[in-house]
Image (cartoon, rainbow, N blue to C red; front, side, top):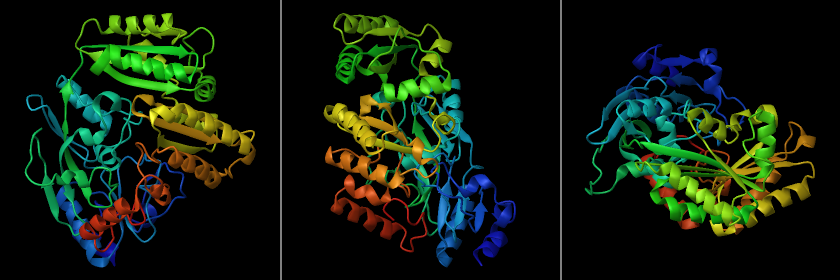
Amino acid sequence: MIVERLLAELGPDIVTAGDDIPDRNRKDWSGLPPVLPLALIRPRNTDQVAAVLRLCNALGTPVVTQGGLSGLCGGAHPLAGGVALSLERMNRVLSVDPTQATLTAEAGCILQTAQAAAADAGMLLAVDLGGRGSCTLGGIISTNAGGNQVLRYGMTRDHVLGLTAVLADGTVLPAMNRLLKNNVGLDLKQLFIGAEGTLGVVTEAVFRLHPRPTHSATAFAGLPDSAAMLALLARARAALGPMLTSFEVMWPSFYDVMQAGSGAAHPLTGRHGVYVIVEAGGFDPATRDRLESLLAEAMEAGVVEDAVIAANLREERALWAVRESVSQYPRILGPITPFDIGIPLDRMIAAVAALESRIKARWPDAQTLSYGHMGDSNLHLVVNVPSCGAAQPTKEIKTLVYDLTRDLGGTVSAEHGIGTLKRDVMGHSRSAAELATMRTIKAALDPRGILNPGKVFA
């Protein structure tokens, strides 16, 4: 019934059904088994999105919105008996306004495309993550994505000035604010940022832009231990202030495995207890000098053992190579159980030590790779148990990691969202009252429960 209704209103150019649905739209990167939806809908504008939701809401048909399908938690994974709504055709940058410092684009626009449009106008779209070449603006809005520059510029939520969202019944909510200061009533856009398509479908957005830094410098440092890492972070904050853009940390458990597996060059002499990438950017011609001074003083204090600063873009990319080699996990490690957690910095050292040791005690041959965005307390963890092959003990590993995260006052999701895979542990990081309020909002905006059912708090 719903497929026929959709075809009648939108036509076969927009609606694809049955075996003609591409394999890529039957899954995301979560590792969940592929699912064939009733139909794949690829609208070209907001009005067509509204028509889809209006029809699906009338018939009670579930709708799962898809962007770049690079999410790790199952938020864009289709449902049997539902339709997949892909915004891949709504992929245009609509305008760049250097005077107002804004970029307006459709939700299916690839992040890297939007970044390039901003750069062409001499501006910076400061949301940045490793999946920039595949993730969409709608996807990063829906998950409130973080990435490599959160320390300086904040999460996606801090970059979105306005958006257009389509509600479950097809109502179009045009909240395309372009002003930094607008205190008229509730800031409704915030309802849809991080909601993973459970409250509405974002179709367009206005992003805040920043002046493009004229000077930058990137350093790679080897430190004796985790305590030195925290000491260097404190020194970097004090010495660089707002120039500090990134502070990425790799423990040997991650660095040694991924450096050897990826074939990336090791830029330092010898091996170290912790590896750190420090990136500074701004408008001070002395940016590189200030980073050099920071590292020199840290070396004199015994905080840094060895360091190198990139001389050009090619060397900068080489310094980031191991940190950005995570797409090679399947080849290097095989099946994995990945984590994206937040831990208070004063408990980070204990958390990494406890996680690695407890997993090793339970599965002696386990590989536990630890790394992350330490400047914003975001720890990534990847676990592989070689002796278990394809049948990884995922449930047991998750219980161990998430229970410890809860006990340390952390969050089970720092930047990747909740989707299906973390739904049952939301109570580890949110109170019963908070979860109840979320469900109240869901019931008000989507009373028939058609939007991404079974995901997040739904």
